[in-house]
Length: 190
Image (cartoon, rainbow, N blue to C red):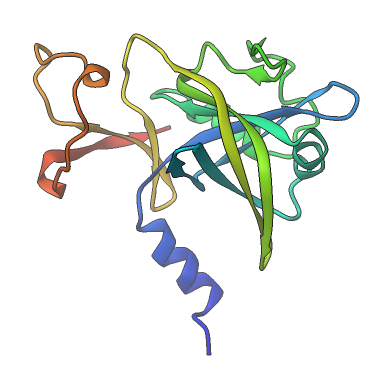
């Protein structure tokens, strides 16, 4: 016996996650994209990530055909953009600033904290989703580090490390393990 669908959603909604917009081009060169919270690193050597995509997503065919995409990690204040890319809107890029990466894929350069350009190396269908495993060929971090947009219990919010503004740039220090008391939920975005 498995957990009830709604109970599963409730359990997973209790795990805060970052928000990303995955972008690609379809076979006609038209930009496509979707919002996701299902992104994670897989390996550092080679640099590899995975993205989970609903089999019913209208962007999936383009992701599969192009076999490449950009993961745009979204910052604070971008919940409306994430809602747009989560919608069934036909032209999600109509009023969105973007540019092409060196590989020619759409990058939401004005709205991201960081980005990773990826080439799909493997697909795995599990239930109603496909896991796209991809090697990262390029990427970057915006120099101004605003807090990331987070998703928790069906609301947008900002969750940032507790540190003094005088502390060194977070990108330049080595990674450390932190406990729950080292982080704080700063409130919902509307």
